[in-house]
Length: 329
Image (tube, rainbow, N blue to C red):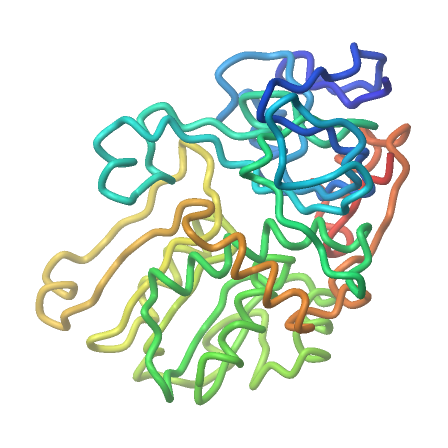
């Protein structure tokens, strides 16, 4: 079958690899669409994935075309979205319900072959059936939405909060949509990309700016969310948290990123700094939300690019052009 392959740091090609073979509790998915994500850029840089080469792609959906000998939950022809998370279920973190912090954490498309291919294999337990009205080629959005749902679980947002989001790419826009639906009094967005800010305004942001100073809120925001992973944005965001407020590190920074905190201010103003790592008990809820129309795929998806052009798509994504880019095998 045809697949994208990250062969070494900085080198990605489209090549032919063996067709996947399902284990007893696995299914083979004919991939309809696979989303590009910042994690894919990190893998291309040689981070995250323990070994290369790897077929990337952890955001995907498609049709079941093969099933293992002990699979009863789905049938051939079922359309599914796939949770890429792979846990050991044995370590201390798994046993205490923090599977996303598993000591042997792995993921389809990160540590094992993923969905940037014609076919992908996944445990049947990781597959969620799609309702008839959901288009399979749009359902790759469910995985990033499940990460956003997890982020809001961490925030424990309260009604009437004033929210500031750094970044209006896919993840920042998803956090915007969830903030609107979790009772925020206002949601402001900061981004240096004018096209992405225009999308935030289209989705009904309270205010948008290229610099938080333009928003004129000296008292700060109750919830500040970084969805960029950019050091300058993170540093600025930490200084914008109101008293008794929370800063969520949601964007994925590279290993070398460093910022400075003010310990006295954190103590004196009771500021919470926290993070959100991938998916935890949120994939099925994200699928349900997606089915109810919490996101408009036609707004979120800017490009659908054939698998043959995967390297070109990665270049476009790295340049910050567009919103969600989907690969269509």
